[in-house]
Image (cartoon, rainbow, N blue to C red):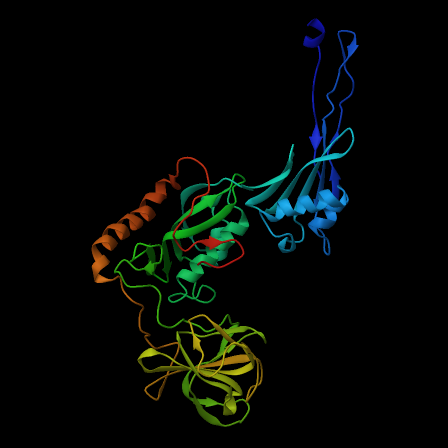
Length: 440
């Protein structure tokens, strides 16, 4: 017993594997003399190899170097109970765990993504598999600040979001842009001194990154005008949208712009000197200078009435919308293959790509808006709003909107507004902002 009390047992286990294979190994410290005897170090019974799936590599190929052909088939079959090997991404991490004495494979961990790991373990009857989900908790975070130059910098540099990865902040900014895209062009209209406030709910992983999240309430003060958006589900089934405090949808019948552009190169006017024809004539639309190949979106729901050549506009698309509106999009380099005459399109659908066909001196989109046979200025017309909160849901709306507005005020003194008890995967019936994708 005296001998045991003088023993110092320490284990140092290091895994590596950025590209290729990393081996977990023992890194002993210098031998210490304790009570006249050298210190004894425990040798891990398990050896781990970490592989990063390279281009052209497969899970089957990695496993084939560790087991014979019969066991290889059993392992892949067990894995396929949880996931599809051919859908694995380049860089996926595969950890093989061997018995150190004879390199007998004891287990395999396959990291599918930040949230899912397939674990393969051996028992007396063979190989078993299970899916391990990264635990999350749910909280509601508040952030607010002044905008010195652009919204991106204000949010990314916000002290209120300390601990949130930059990638997650970028997703939040993208969601803000989606919510207010009918009212504010963040790339053109934001000015120094504008302000923002927001409250959003998120699912958080142990490393602090966000699995998903959605805005509960948001406010942008732009040039002295306050724009507010509050989430509400009229049907109560998870299908909803954003509304202003007056109960009117922030979603409009038409988008402010049909594409991401560099500048407005020519505005709507009754008299303009044409750069190609060298003569004065009316310009019945707006020209948006943009990179060749930039995506062009339908600004509202409707039916395509023309897709093809259209005089000076070159390759053009015309769409008929409700309430007598028509939009036209000209000088396209090419069309979306899915768009044909008679095709129904939704607001935001890509219908074509920027070019300079027809009478044009450079790549741009010529965009027109008509109603009742008369051209309208797309930048100056008051377009119809979206649907308001249904009358039957008005009482519930009043209660929920008051609560959400209070979150913005409360957040000024309480950055983390709420924290769900316990841990685990939480399913939210809201427009979840996913990694690498858009709000849905």
